[in-house]
Length: 399
Image 1 (cartoon, rainbow, N blue to C red):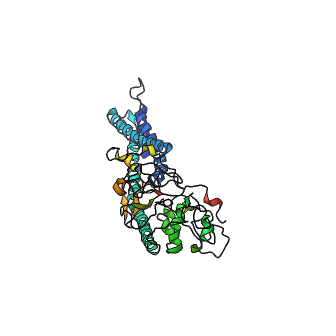
Image 2 (image 1 turned 90 degrees about the vertical axis):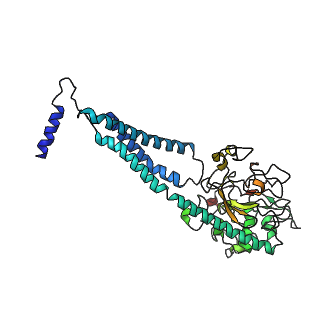
Image 3 (image 1 turned 180 degrees about the vertical axis):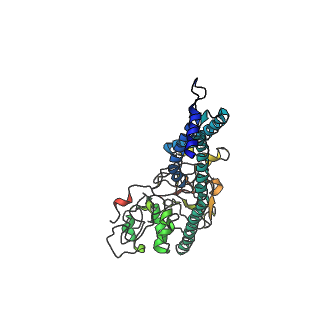
């Protein structure tokens, strides 16, 4: 009986073809809505990982285009679906395709709900990631105070008087300090990385290398190209050497350190008697390349305070990369850690990632981005830098 009823319905739809006025047609709008809905659904798997792994980096042109295409396909599917439903309803059966129309409306809506459920939980994860990073810096700060108490109130500084920041330690596996940094006979001169100063906390204050990797407690949360420095990771002359026998985080230390440190290789020593509000360590400098991201475009940055009067987005462009442009964890000289929403959080709104243009010691919210070898403009200038990326560490790792 069902077959007869189905055939009878088809006969009624096609019986009157005299002038074509009763011809049953499928709504092209409904079909188009369904096709667009399918396209948006096919694009969804590629959209989710982009949001989950962005970490505050500005999306590439291809990524932005991907976002726009997915969004426009979804909106167009919904609009065309609604229009086709409105056209089909009064057609008296001459237009069909409600299924296509409803697919065009409901599929993008379900897609949006799915995307919302997947992305919204990332907020708490980002906050947890931020807290772990802050805990790392807090531990580093406490170790720095202990170190300073043992070394005449001076914070960690590798090498000797006159040592230059060159981004690499000449011999991180050397048997003594002089050969490690290429010091002269009187202990002056030489070369060192910023991370070599931080490694003194591993060598003398029992801080583990994992502490220097942002959220380094889980392989799933490590940054791309970043992992904790460990014994056996690289070939060394002494196979029985321990962590305390080295002078740096391997041959390419930037791949084992997630944080920027005050540029200590200069005429001004960093001591506990400095300004309490001076930033001395934080998330990596956004104006320098890292293993996981290219340096930001400095010309897109403008503080949102007078006299610069930039927008909130322009101001956030000056933030560190790891925390989705929301801000950066900063360790201040008085050892407290704060998640600062702007990079100009130092003394008198000084920018912790740039060189101050003031020689008098006044803070500079804008400043100038650093390069290898840059030095602070004055004793109150927070200039947090990290070593540059030179070569893939995997080419020199132990196989």
